[in-house]
Amino acid sequence: MNHESTDGQRGDEGAVEGESIRSSPRSFFVLPAPSLLLYGAMVVAAVALFLLVRAYGETLTAPEVAAGGATGHAVARKGDALLQVLLALAAVVAGGLLLGRLFAWVGQPPVIGEVVAGILLGPSLLGQAGSAVILPDAVAPYLGVIAQLGVILYMFVIGLELDAGRLRSRARTTVLTSHASIVVPFVMGSSLALWLYPVLSHQGVSFTSFALFMGVATSITAFPVLARILSDRSMAKTELGVLALGCAAINDATAWCLLAFVVGVAEAQVSGSLLVCVLSVGFVALMIVAVRPLARLFVRRCEEGPLTRGRIAVVLVAVLLSALATEAIGIHAIFGAFLLGAVVPHDSRVAREIGHRLHDVVTVLLLPAFFAYTGMRTQIGLVSGAEQWLLCGVIIVVATAGKFGGTLIAARLTGLGWRPAASLGLLMNTRGLMELIALNIGLDLGVISPALFAMMVLMALATTLATTPLLQLLAARKAHGAGGGR
Image (tube, rainbow, N blue to C red; front, side):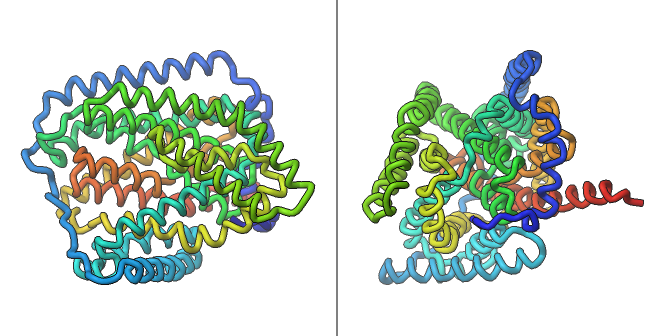
């Protein structure tokens, strides 16, 4: 994270979010009763529409064999596991650095280069044999552990920088907007399943499971990647940045509960998925009621003396335990780490010093490992022929329209101006890390085929790549209008 945020660095983005977020402050504190009724109507309508889609979809017949077949596995190279891990890490860090600079040169956040580097080091570019030289199957378990640890620590750092006070002042707005950004793409994605199921699924998967997964997969916002984009563009602490982070956090937590429900349906264990939702609410309440006061007490004591190794160890143990709790619940470890960071006062010495010490190691060494790990499973070559590329394009359009449209409409109804609402819609359309996690789960369960997995990875990459240039375009149009353009 860049800790030196200035007005010059914020550039055009600051102009965009500042336009009408401050012009109608009352809308952030009081949500009108009609909006609450609209929220309920939105949820009921979404459920009704999905039931209609399901009723027709269950009459469709899928092929006997999934499109794309099995992905296959490269033959693992023999040798010392540590040697392979070191080689893999060196490759992903160097590749991420080079592509990060290249993407920064063309106006994209460096994190996009790291995502692309991870995919390029996999079989999509190098093929199975070439990829096995750098990323053999034998290294996957070790690289996966490193990757997950990097994501956990990164989300803790993001939580430390979040101004929870700003978020609480507009909690109702954040909840309504984030849930609208789930409901609309969920309905559109599950409806798209009517077309995709007979082509890209197989008879071993029920239409209900397939449609639910498509709905969830098109609803996800890449919380960590969004955080990196905001940080790289010096927007993380702006009004729009804080609102986007809050919406993304609620969005992904909710989407993860829905994904747990989908897994339960696919494995005929619906009661378990409902338990995940109940435990998730209980965990959030525990962090707010019990852990937050303890965190504030700890911060006050640290202000009186140096931040010793012992105190840092206490913080890291708390991060790991919080991540462990949410992983055990079933909503992924990153939410526990983020929530712990969010309950620590963001302007405290503890937040500043620990965030500064962790930032470089996490973003340079650990986080790129995840992109390489997921790139090992992606084979873009499985998308072949005009029909499959057409399907891929339709998936991108539906996912973008649902996410952007749902966010834009809800943000406008809660008082944002058009440009801040549009900027929020563009940010919420960012996918990547969380999308890849969800897609890997779907592939492991057999709910989606390898070919559809590749298409969804392309969708995640395309929507993430589009975020920055569209934000720049929106900011440029605002600046042109303010300058009395021709």
